[in-house]
Image (cartoon, rainbow, N blue to C red; front, side, top):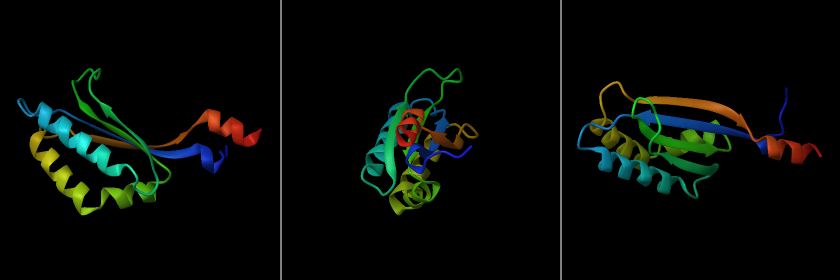
Length: 113
């Protein structure tokens, strides 16, 4: 099924477990990334994931207009540096990253009305 381009987004979810004693630092680094993305081409919105995961993971969700724009932002020196710091502060093997194409049904309905 085709969906209107203005209702279609690229969503990236990152989850991880901070090492004992690094929880606040990891949260701060995640906030740093979310703040950095504001105003970048294609960035729509971001969310910090703080609690509720049954494995105790924290993370972030970012919403982009396209995968290409998300990748451009992810490959900047700033993001690569912050991610390297995050990887040192989390439990080995705990990092999970997933990406999805998402549809906003309200925008889809509005664009076909």
